[in-house]
Image (tube, rainbow, N blue to C red; front, side, top):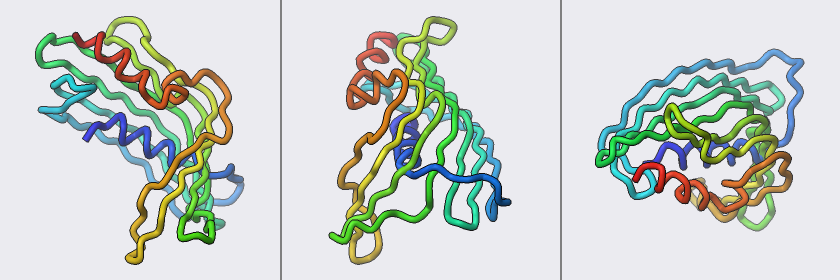
Length: 182
């Protein structure tokens, strides 16, 4: 599974939630640090190895709102060329843990991300692509009879700052990563 796509999806889901007040003491306050290596990985159809570092701070408040802040760095090394790219980001996502019931069997999560959701660069080299600023995302799911959620749609309801990858439907990602690893 591509970590970048997973993280983008998680951030997008988190971005779909409304803003919160942080005056109250959190009922959940978790800090995590993850270091992982994924051999036999693939990025934009290029085989290689991924090294990931994630630092996450998650707070859930009694009123159902949350604040999730942190940073991540993914370094991918192509098997054939040995070239490396860095995917990184940092910032915070706020919203609520309760979805909006749309009354038609679907629910929508709304969250807002503030910061640097994605920077793609060559290791020890230039930035290739950067999305920065605020983004509010609405993600809708169909609620299956067993309670499982099936993705239906996702839309951006507010965007401030340059977001070339988001605006391209995430096509810009592989358009710059592929040539950098060749």
